[in-house]
Length: 69
Ligand SMILES: [Zn+2]
Image 1 (cartoon, rainbow, N blue to C red):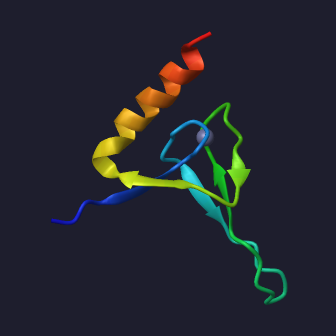
Image 2 (cartoon, helix red, strand yellow):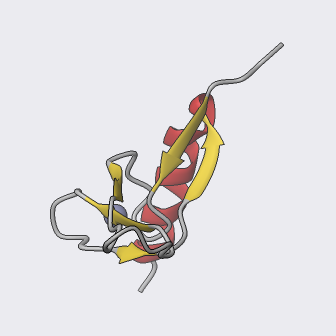
């Protein structure tokens, strides 16, 4: 059975990751992804892909990691 895959931000775990289309005059450039989550501001060439059912788990894991001061 297929699981639906979701792209999430590697920094905050938000599913609001977007692909930046940055084709410069037809040149092949590395794809950039950026995060639309408030207060994150991640942008880079990588994203995390997880099963849809794991998004909450991942976000929880990231939050608890950030919260452990
Ligand atoms: Zn983010």
